[in-house]
Length: 145
Image 1 (cartoon, rainbow, N blue to C red):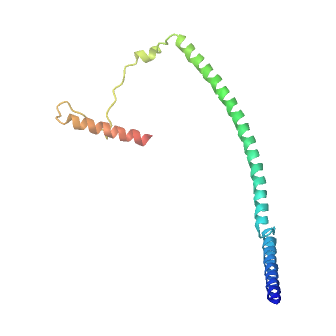
Image 2: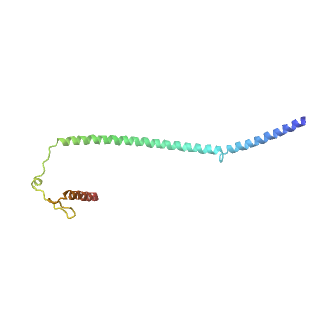
Image 3: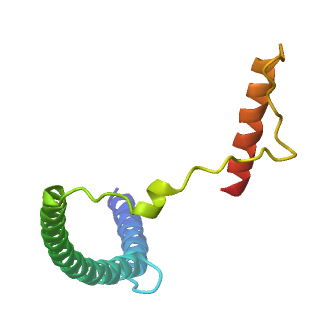
């Protein structure tokens, strides 16, 4: 009976020794800086440092842009006030009469162009000609733009 107990004790001790060796290998690979979790933690730590630096730079840039935007906003408000004063002073100016040559010149009649339809007084299709006239005029204005 003692012999059986000693054999079981030796088997238990060997199994615990093998278990400890397996755990030590796993722990060693876990803390390995190249492949294991230790490496992943080291990489994440470096990335956090980089992100912190980038965030600091972005905050400085944003605060500089905000200051510049405030300056531009103040300048635009000052310019708007000056423009309002100029417009108000324009209302106080007397109305200027057109030059005498412009009043004496009679309006010259404009001859219709060859591509424009002419509207006759005795024509029953005056509405159709008028619509064609405006549509061709609109097409030329759009082409000019």
